[in-house]
Length: 493
Image 1: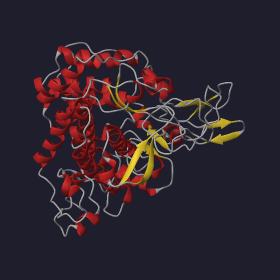
Image 2 (image 1 turned 45 degrees about the vertical axis):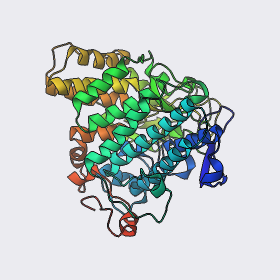
Image 3 (image 1 turned 60 degrees about the horizontal axis):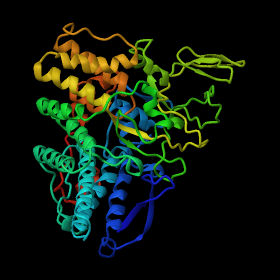
Image 4 (image 1 turned 90 degrees about the vertical axis):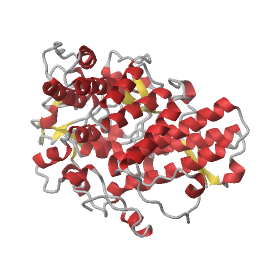
């Protein structure tokens, strides 16, 4: 069994692959248990393996969630980007089936680890915490798979999970899959602390479990349950920080009052780094950062102008979403929407705005940066709770207005007057506000699927491939073949 242990000078979640260790001689001490638990966090960000995770790779769920919506398009020539835009999914596309291939082994390993840790003689409270963290991670990874593929045949029996010759199991029912995820989140939330700090920052906390649970309820349209959980998070002490952009700054390492779950990154790591900036910063003409640093600039990801133009011009969130950017130390600006001449060279207009989002790591000049990746923020919860309140009451409540206006106040845009919107118009405002607030944070795909706009948007952009089946990816054909059809493929593939 390959055990991924985490080590760095910052004691952050950076994996190093250790030698093959048998399950029997590894799970003996509390330190072994901690190493095993920490290793399972490597599924959150897989770095240069180009597999899955919350990173900027085309194989990660964050960028796929963005490319399949109105958030982003790509300047690079690889045809896979256009296939994502068009919802043109196939069983032969390694990127589309790759999330399944990458994450299923993590879920099985977590099931095994829970069983092994239960047998270790160690402090009971700490043991319970480690098991709770594993259950939270299993819920999260299962939820990711559920969002992209529907119910999947996860192993909850540790004996079968450890046996490569175990009899294949079919996909669970919809309700059973939801129950698996719900049970794990609830069990973990009952044990874990409200938050983690210091060297434990980035681990799943009670609050993170509740956010995952709330998102599950929103997907299932269990509005009342979502309100209950949202109110619980609301009373947990989180609040918006004054400057939106600081959530994504290198100076924010270790978190703030708004961050509920983040991935600690390390520019010197081989896996847990943040390479978002290299993927988005333009090179022709080259972006010049106010810091004067020489940055990697690959100029790929853009936000379509039709989406960018929805923002109010005075929206402070545009401070990290550029139409115009500096091309020299004097601050000369290039307008990416119109194009123009810089130092005698004409540059054509871009296909969209530059979604910079993240701040520069002053310690790095490579594409690897140590700016922490945000997974979930309190602003996300506020907008979800406002949406759920509107659904429960079929009209926006005073609390719903307060929640959306809290987000808008920070952005410097006009608040909505209580009573000025009906159910439909408030829902439309929420749909826009979640775009303005959460762009390129991996939330848009599930939002649009929940609202029923995911497929229709792709069709409106000219896709000849978008159908109702495209709210789910195909499973890898290998899974269908090797189980002799016990595992069934999703409709349409």
